[in-house]
Length: 402
Ligand SMILES: NC(=O)c1ccc[n+]([C@@H]2O[C@H](COP(=O)([O-])OP(=O)(O)OC[C@H]3O[C@@H](n4cnc5c(N)ncnc54)[C@H](OP(=O)(O)O)[C@@H]3O)[C@@H](O)[C@H]2O)c1
Image (cartoon, rainbow, N blue to C red; front, side):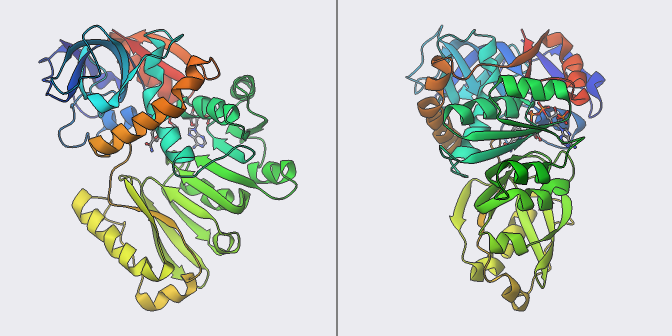
């Protein structure tokens, strides 16, 4: 088969379509003949060599695809040859064929073309597992999405509106904000010309929003905390603005805020101030309510993960149990161990995919959530797709078709 190969870590030009071995598939897998795959920001990091595929995953790019079942393993009884499907992948979508565990495969939703179905699995699973399964956004609540015009944002707006939330977005141009408004966003903020904290406060009578989905990270951390209302929840899924920041934790404490992110938070407390280092290379696949007195244990868990998963060397913590007294009223929902959407176990991904099929697929079938496809390119033009994504001029998803 043909696949897009990263010939060496580097710019978009290193992506080349080459002849490679067909993937092997196991008893629990479906072998998909790929119709389309969709780009994600993570692909650009993998191309540069800073986001290696998890152990056992395909070496090729591509976290989602749509296509036709070409073969099914003996335990993949739900599917039959010829079924039109889409799938959440750990890699391998930029190819003519990919093998995927049966629990990560979804039917193409009625009313959506086979090609456009490739735009859904990664963004839907990311948004559903973070905003809804973990941050518990509910009807009647307020929800701020940074990067509203991104692949993630264009889906998040639609599903949050469908489920009854009031949606705020930030984006970097009037054209992008207009697209967000068309998708249903209620409050559209141009972060280049407006202070989003002030606007959020103005629109919420000074209260702030219930949930924030953030892709910027370090530079927004303090401002996100300042934009949350009592019992607010911040979920960080990306670090497009950077990974390190300094933050005043008083707001977390006073307003009982929850901060969740795909990596870890490392506190170096001094009074109510702390330097927060956010490591970007790991994700959580388990969570638990942490009693603040257990924070010391958490630090050790983090350090274990640092060793086990080879996280950034500067991601060390310098907290002694004596210093924890200033944090005794902070309770955080803390994700430990490592595994993002991509690095989660097969069972965990299957759980998210089944929740998505139960909760989101009906909204897509009903036409309440639509694919937002900015451009389709042939697989051989993957480099052009990466250039487009890195220019940030797109709105929604970029597809590669075989
Ligand atoms: N944790 C997970 O499992 C997971 C899964 C999927 C995606 N993600 C993350 O979610 C984010 C969105 O992914 P995507 O694939 O949807 O990306 P995308 O379509 O490429 O969109 C990203 C958008 O972010 C905005 N942006 C870029 N740099 C920015 C900055 N410094 N400050 C503010 N906004 C900035 C840009 O729009 P503007 O013109 O408005 O700036 C850009 O269009 C990425 O950070 C990605 O890594 C995480």
